[in-house]
Image (cartoon, rainbow, N blue to C red; front, side):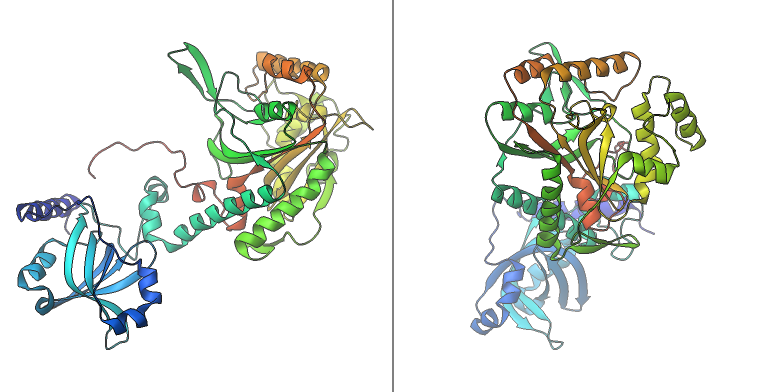
Length: 493
């Protein structure tokens, strides 16, 4: 069996042969008259004219038959068959093709269109030119990339060899476009806030830390844009959103990647109840625009965005799925004991709210298949959400779970600077006790709040998770082009 090194060495020799003949295997400019898809759609017209056209593409297969060579080439828009005959291109050009062209090479092809005896649309080549010589062989057509991690590391090959993967990322782009289109039509203004922040706030998560040399100061990759976006509300904008990357120094699993895409939007003079209806409308629009339907399959389940989403309370879910009789009034010690019985790890510094959340994530969330809004969270569940008027022990917050995955987090925004300062102090106390996932005090944000922040509601959508749901994909790495992974040792092989 020929080794990789031997294959690569042979291709390097072919590269050198082209150079010796005065041919630049990597020219600056390329001549192209049509994309392959256009040539195919206008095939009858172009064939009838018998006019030479120029196409480009990567060689996918080569089949030699004496003085003739058939090959398939692909330009990113479509695939076509090419045909080179010694009598048409000349012996020297034909020989050079046979001696130097490999699967994976990019060629510029000049010729006329015709149909073979088998009625296959084909370009009869009269002239060819190497425009990019490949030195490594592509994965085997039938076996592809067998190692899953190798697929993620070499996503460019995964896309090239696997049409399903390529289509998934095309759909990802469409879902994001549909999201922006919907929000723009609803009157929301897209804004951009800092990714490098002096304080990592706006969510309860551990940040990535870096250092800026010129200013001699530590900075953090943002865990959320929330506090900056709410400053924009204070500045007078009423409906805003940001769709971009967040970074959290947390574990990696089926639904978590340290670098991920989030949508956050804020609407002044609105509350969480308004956002529940808005969320249904948003998701229905995205699904219909991207998939052409509001019902789809996720795993073994048929999910529907067409029906009214279910609404249940946080404590009722803990009662029914974790069998905690009185989650609101039970002391922390009882909740910690229950967690250990359920196989949920408990740290000494964790609050009762944190332990309940960990129980919920393990025992309750996976059982929520159809779209379900979870409401009525305790105050400790979010330091940035407004208390409910009728019961200040609860916050006006909801999460949306679909297919066992949290897709949306939203709440009526806390705009009382005194209450916010007290909540931040509680977060600082938790951090001092050892908790890493906190939203620390931010004096700059508190100062902005004291100028007056309008009543508002905010919404966060995990875009990667939404794409997982709409593409029936069960690992976040499958919907992120280049997921975070440990690097392999470098080398030719």
